[in-house]
Image (cartoon, rainbow, N blue to C red; front, side):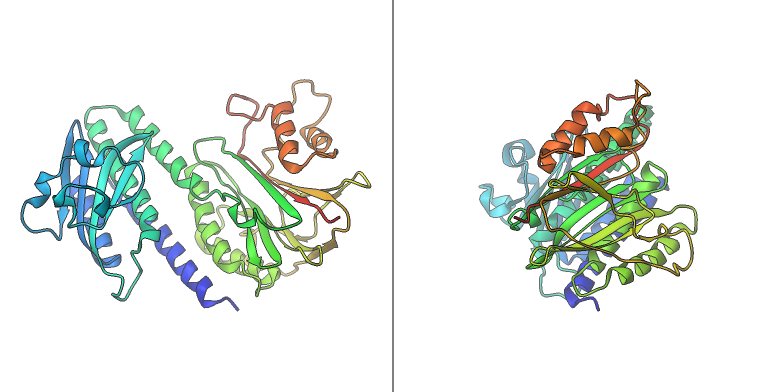
Length: 411
């Protein structure tokens, strides 16, 4: 059974995803600036229990575009360039000298392309009121949502000035920034004895439909996965964001991998109505017993290279991809014990579908060649990226490329 903490995490992940989707739909419906700001005000005031909200935006000069929960004109004494412009990270309002800012709790800068485009001041945060907590740990979400709203408002101005190309470019950049927030930083496993990990993500467009993750399940067990949505672009990225939220909430040490896969299959079916599917490799590794359990749901088989035997084992045991059928009737769980120093490479199909100029060796053979050595996984990635010319400048790349590698040091 999933824990209360997992359910709370799922609730907040779903809340964030639903909020992002609601605002995306509102923007696509071309709601006016006033309507978008009313949606935003309602979310912060009534959903996140924030009493005061003030937004300054740069529209050919700084101006106040939203005042909520504030009486009087004291806020008019706030000068953005003098009081706020130097701040690039979320800060406490108490650190700013201007008395007009002391009525607030937190200052949230909105940065786009390394430039401040808005500042949000929030105050009277009610942590006791029933509902979602608006505490400072969630202010990054408010920052991301505000970025979307402010960029949407700016896009309306650009559209009115007939700069459609620039509008689309900004939207894609923003989508890329949001998706990059979902890429794991691998901080959770840095200090785990006996393993190290490396990740790589290169979307074909600004956003993509690939996903990888790795995190602690408990003191001696880690979970990791890699997944790929059929198709590319915005629709694939949105589906993968939903998928990630569900997987993160479900994937705990107390649940069987088969149950995770079955639940995810149901949720993918509800999300895509048979129009897309997701391939997934999901696994757990016990650092005390060196045992790995995994399910490969239609994904490219990860390669496990044994440094002593110099052999590669492909991890294929599992089932069909998620969202392909209403019911997955047969799921096999793979099991292996890693007894010698080894390294694991998980990847999406973009890596092995690269066109080779010499036409002599396949991309898969190149990958195997880069893997079969004593190098750690970080150096292996560097070698692979260099020799296979994996970059945005390579015109032979036609799909997202994602890799997750793990070193198992069992001596």
